[in-house]
Image 1 (cartoon, rainbow, N blue to C red):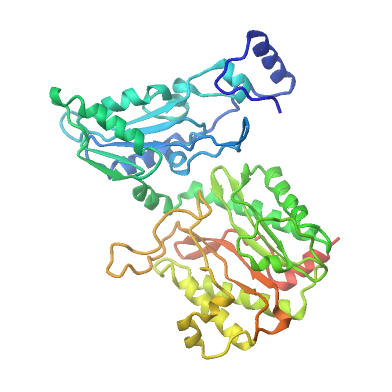
Image 2: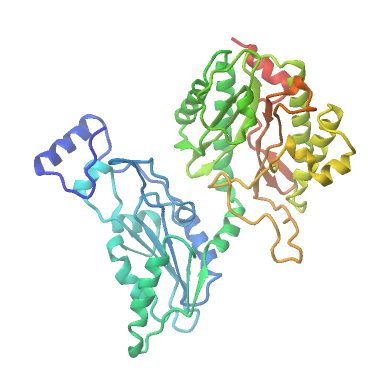
Length: 477
């Protein structure tokens, strides 16, 4: 890779060579066509602005670039909240929203995007920049300026604003203090600073929790790509393979189908490693007779998928493995039945736990009565996590799991457009009193589920998960 020259202009001869090199290598010196659903992002901004009083200001930055080591950076990933309102993926950008006055003045709401200026020299090294003019046209904001203008403009935008909305306790705190100080310095002229600061994120959390048709379509595609990656890994699996070899099969399938990156660090856990919930080394060699647990999903156009499958590396479940596997699968089927509009979010977990606990009792992993074991939570020796989470732009997506407006904060009710994961599991570590036949077996089965008007749809259904389906697939040449 060419040495990166951050914040420094290349010499003229180097700039010319860079342009020529870019052309020779087929790199774009102008952007590929950017298709942005301007109306979609504008509608989201309007919904947010409707929650703000007239004249209030909201500020939302994107994520910073992060250095990996020396002068190399991690692959850049925009901030999810920022992207949700803009569709803009460049770093060093801030969105400012100003609520309309709502009076006879007719002062409309404004969306202002501050971004990096055009810079042909930097674009040779780092790629195309829209610049303020391009950003305003392509992304449909009302105004745009350079990121260097932000501080000066904020002192003006916040003058006489009744409230400031931003992510409290985050990266902007120190900068906000400077803006407010600049406004207060104008007090002798009659200018007032915002009387209140309000956390912006809870409003956006509730908006992001319900996915629109376009989001649902993207998540369907992401889940399908990930399902095909799991199929590829199953077909490639052989006893003696290293976990990282199977991880490579996943990553290949993600990228060849257009996914930009993994949605999270893949878990590829063979044998006893599957009993480590967030195992990440992915460097062990599988042994004949091992189960392999793969928890992996791609990110496509800013949206995550999240699938887990567990399969025998040699293509054939042993009897103890199959007993535990079919127990986990039965728990997942029970959880699915608890997913529909109007049902509590917690219902899926409760249904899965009852099936898992009864199975643990039947297999001799636990003793006692079903209700007793659930009440005293002794089942957490083998099942210690929840049965799912919200899914969206983030793999553990935003949104409250409880209705915080109600006394006692009961589990919130499911609504069409919510996307959840359903991921029961069982993890049996060696322990006194635990049948040895089940030692070091870890199993999890996870799918992405969209709540629909009449029930639910499993977005990741293409990934095989019954014993018969998995064994048949793995026996194919």
